[in-house]
Length: 113
Image 1 (cartoon, helix red, strand yellow):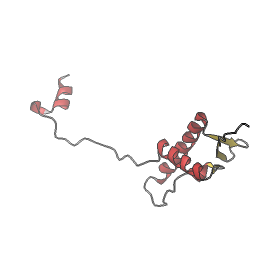
Image 2 (tube, helix red, strand yellow):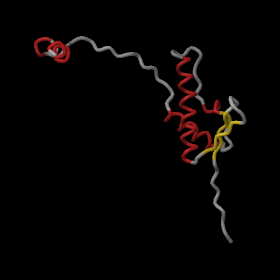
Image 3 (cartoon, one colour):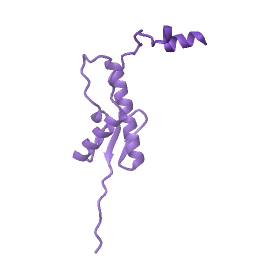
């Protein structure tokens, strides 16, 4: 218990001046980023397209490129599923492992006579 107090308080009751380890966290594409991109793209073209159309461009020399690419695909897929759950778009895949397509659900009001 005393060892824990020394670590928490430092020696002599003063906070430890040792630097705290903080790992480098890459700036990854998040679901919120993907939601905004999908909504903006579908506002311009409601017919949508393949999931890859909604992915961000990742430079070839970007640090952690493979991790960034995987995070972008996962976040964009989750954003598409969330929008489909809300009723904002449709997801279509013709067969297993085929391209996944997103399209907007256009709500048109019908005027009654």
